[in-house]
Length: 131
View 1 (cartoon, helix red, strand yellow):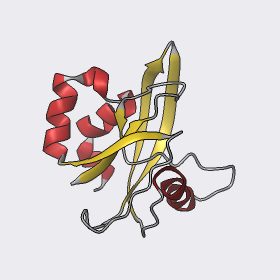
View 2 (view 1 turned 45 degrees about the horizontal axis):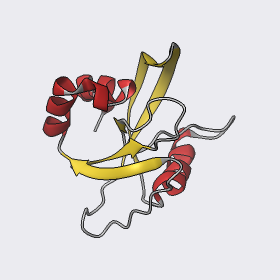
View 3 (view 1 turned 90 degrees about the vertical axis):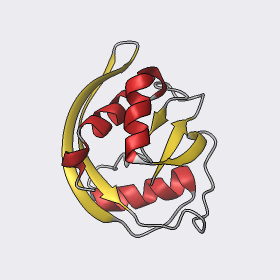
């Protein structure tokens, strides 16, 4: 199962769309894995060890002509769904849920408008994620 988040209503792009667990947004000079753990704490109140996965480049139109062209370091954490304490920060996250890859891929095909563009790319290119 994968923990995903619904982006907060106040986000300037892709508001209320479902997306990956979190995005790292590293500070200048910050290592990707350090940024990923920081953002997990900031967005979801979660602190778990991470395992590196793949490296994915993508380009996606996100909202109102805004385009993201990014290189993404993918990380995985193994955590128990029943025992993981999640405390989402409401300015970032509207909701969270657990779902299988197969369920998410099907839902993204059936209702693409409910999923962030980059997350749809990740679901289409799952093998490259190294998970």
